[in-house]
Length: 205
Image (cartoon, rainbow, N blue to C red; front, top):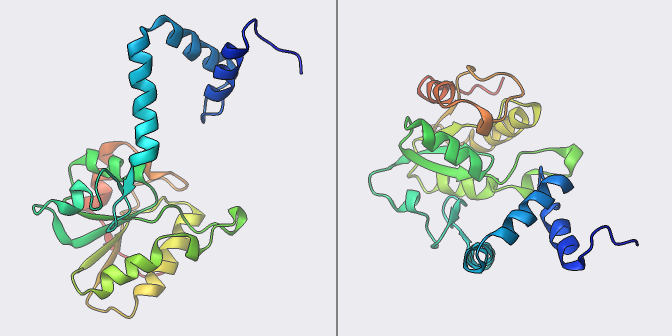
């Protein structure tokens, strides 16, 4: 293979940056050249932050959110309503909902949605652990806050069927102020906040 750049070290760095989502080789080159203009200490701190994150990050044993400890700050916060659990697809969705400042309960991060086309089934998601949380008797409401896509709706229905045997637990879904096929993390804060406040019972239809 012909070396594209005058430096093999430069080419290796560009190759690694280009592996990041949404980063093409031109952007990767700009990032690498920018890194070269930084003081060595700044680059070392950047690399250390990424390395430490990858080696030491944990996932909350309650909600599966990213955490520095076994139980995340949200689950450990006594001011949160522990009887209400908002079910989301990923960690970005937790951040999006928190940004609305309209929700004060806890979360449950599934780690994806059911998508047979992508080889993702119910057993690949944190659905069984959600059922266990409900089975503990401490949960009064489950809010299904998944994206309004076919995969999201399929996952909503699957969870609904799993929780049908808990009649004392109210199952709600975000109000359809969200556009069809919209991903939650890209919805504006006002719309998302209103969808939370105006959530409606989930009927499985």
